[in-house]
Structures are given as C-alpha cells and as structure tokens.
Amino acid sequence: MKQLFIALIAGFAIALSSCGPEPPPEIIPPGGGLNDTTLIDVTELPPLIIPPDNPLTVAGVDLGRHLFYDKLLSGDQTQACATCHNQKLAFTDNGNAVSEGIRGDFGNRNTMSIFNLMWSKDLFWDSRAGSLRELATMPIENPIEMDARIEDVLVRLNNSTMYKEKFKNAFGVDTILEEHLAKGLEQFLLTITSDNSKFDKANRGEVSLTEKELRGFDVLKIKGCFNCHSSSLLHDNKSHNTALDKDPTDLGLQEFTKNYEDRHKFKTPSLRNIMVSGPYMHDGRFETIEEVVRFYEDVMPNLNLPVNANAPEDMKIAPRNKISVNEMEDLKAFLHTLTDETFLTNPKFSDPF
Image (cartoon, rainbow, N blue to C red):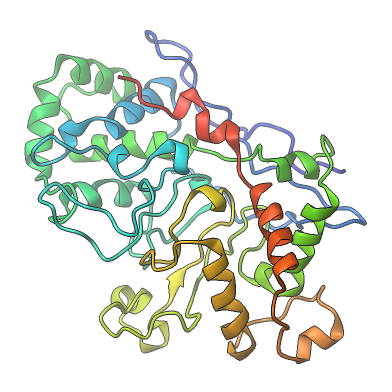
C-alpha cells in the first residue's frame, strides 16, 4: 500500500551538542496510505504547528520531559502533569471519568489523551488554549488541578541546580522565567507521536487486517463516523454539538467564544488508542465504547452533519440501521487495530526520574 509520508519532518533545529540526553523521538506524521481498497485518505493533514521561536532541541525536549513528570510543578508538590496523564493509557487519567486535584477537588472534564499534538489546534475540550505553550501552564495554575502559583514554581526551579543546568542547556538562560517553563513543556509535548498501530502498518503495507477487522472498518465508514474522525489523525480538528450534553452548566466551546452557535460544542477526540483511553466523552460519562456507539447510532440520523461520500446511497438519506451484536464485535476488532503499543511503551516518553 502506498505510503504517503515516509520522510522525517525537515527543518527542526535539533541540537547535537551538550551533555547527555539522547535525541528526541523521530517526528513523523501518522502513517497512512490510500489505494483502491481504501482505508483512510491522509492526503489532507492539517499543517504542522511547530513554533518558529521554539525549535525542537535535544536539551529542550529532555527538559520538558523532566518537567512533565516532576511533582515540583504542583502547589504542594504531590502531583505532576503525568499524574493525570498515564502513558500506558495514551496519557489519560487511569480510567477516571474526571481528575482529582491536589486538594481533593474534581473537575468536570475528562482528561484528554496526548499525542500527535503537532497537528492539533484549539486545545482542550472547549478549545480555550490556542497553543501548546498556552496549554502547558493552565493545569499548573488551575485551583482544582495542580493549584500552584507560577511564581512559586519558578522559585523552586531557580533553586534547583539540575534545572538551572537544564534550562541553561535548552535556552541559554541563567534565570528561569515562565516563558522558558512553557517552552520546555511545549517541546516535549510536540514529540509525543502515535503512528505505529496495526492500522498504520496495514496502511504502509507491512501487515494485513483480518476480515473481522475490515468488516469493523466498514461499519465505522457506513455509519458516518469518519465524517468527524477523519484523516489519519482520526479527528477533524473541529468542535461539534452532537446532542450529547443537555446540561446547561457546561457550555463547551461557547464558554470560550461567547457565541451562542458554539453552545455544547466539544473538540473531536482521535480514535487512535481509543480502546485504552476510556471512559469517554468530555465528561467521561460512558465507561465502554459500546455505550458510545449506541449513543451515536441513535442520535446520528438527527444531526446536521455532512454525510460520508463513501456510504451507500440508501445510507445517505435513510436513518442508519441499528448495529447488530456481530457488527459491534467487528467494530471493536477494528478499533483495537488503532492501539499503538510502541507509543504506549516508548521509553522516550516515559518517566526520566
């Protein structure tokens, strides 16, 4: 199968000097291809989002990795970013519907997975963060999450011999400022990629999907799931109101834009690693993927969404049929092909301490 993306992304300023840390992971787009048997068309990936003022470097990525796993960043130094972002579960929060902060408070949103963020924009469920740099410090300061003052975190970092050296190597600075903290976290987050699932290998022609897995792929295609879970990212970088949330207390995107038409819109998550990243939806209300599918098979015919051009003609105009028990098993078999064990166990994304 034709591989559309095989080269490493050019133009990154990877520092080959300085002491110690191994080079950051290779940065490559999610694998994918398109031929007459058609899996996913990856010809229209969104542009890479690599800040020109924060090129990836060996020292910068190593710094960000340490910061991500360091409890020093929380108010009472009991939680790190990684506390609620477990690599083995696609950097989600250990099966919790919502996360618990350092004071025992719970948020109202499910912890989103972390991967392939170099193609993502408008981050968080409500799209309130326009960049990874902006996103990086929000949980640190959030009173129901890590509940720290950035000023206090910077004092700790500046009093640390290890971090003084790491920030010096990464950014050439003697005094650590908030922008350096955010840039370090941004660099590490940009390197976290998932592109080696069985699905990716099939797209690259390295393995073949089973008949059961291919039938499951067809179920998703016919039911219109790829309208929103599109491209090889398996999300469309957009927010949608899928009639999920009738609770007026969580406005979703409207909370950020203040536009009524954005009411109850939430960011489309990727289907990649979906079978290890539950519970599901912005508030973690569904424990199983079956619950998600049953919800959408009921609501999809009533949504004002574009129809998959590859769907049969009768499926374009008629309410979608219920998914049978056998179809559900086929669908789950395909979704399991989206689990990337290499990503879930990659030591370059793991705890450096």
